[in-house]
Image 1 (cartoon, rainbow, N blue to C red):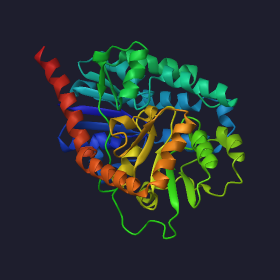
Image 2 (cartoon, helix red, strand yellow; image 1 turned 135 degrees about the vertical axis):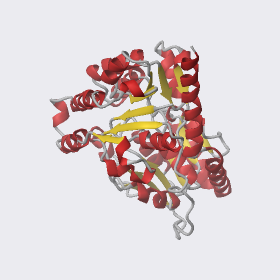
Image 3 (cartoon, rainbow, N blue to C red; image 1 turned 180 degrees about the vertical axis):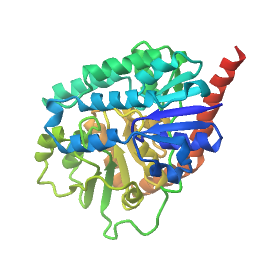
Length: 391
């Protein structure tokens, strides 16, 4: 079985490539990252094809804050990468083509002329569901939050139709596809993993003054429900407690953040290198991912591997790996009162906090490794490959 992966970025594509390579199934990986980025995954450079323009141009666009108003650069870059990648695929000599949503229309159209199986990777909910829930948030906040453009929505829907199968990481994402009419037989559901060598428990990093630290990793934005978490923490006013956000801040949420600028216990420390995250997790007490739409928050698995209990909404994919009231809590989206109640419970019951953290760590060791994910995804791919070959 020979598999080619097309991913306009990184996402979990490098971990998928590593697992397939370990099983001698990886034919090639086409990415917008440089080849040296794959060295730690043990993938030979000859198997990697890099299209660097997409990442270079994206960094430029992100620095020019006003540009998004006049130019749909997300769609432009996805299209550019897709067209370039479609010319690099050896369609005749592969059995399965894995393409990331938004980056695969041209690749799949060309693949239709060959016998390879087309599988679309979609880490977030169905793009129409994503559009719907973000529009609702715009109405609730009165702020024009960035939503997928019509061009991007149309392109992704065409990719859903072109794909033979769609691979998703959680029941939440699967349900969103079923809601918009995708046949259940077309959906493969496999949760992502975590690097247990990179994320682990480290000793003696907790605050010596007993400060209770809540951490959230990821972009500070409406989609991540950052504004609800900030409001909940501010209203709780817990003594000797901090709320720490690790990640960039989207410009649209700045108006909300201004309202809480006087709360010195809410800290924004910006984006940090992946290698620093485990130290930040280990110096914290509780991880919260309060997203209104997040197909599978890989930061949840990372935090659990570092021994943190997790509070996550139903729309994060957290219910795939969190046992409610055992190693964390699953709560409804946009529900500040329940979020406050769960934070309060763990703040005042440190014994339960500690036991939940221990349970989370044990769960990560047992079930959440990338190797475990790799075995499941390989088995799914091989079954599809074998069934097609037998016909």
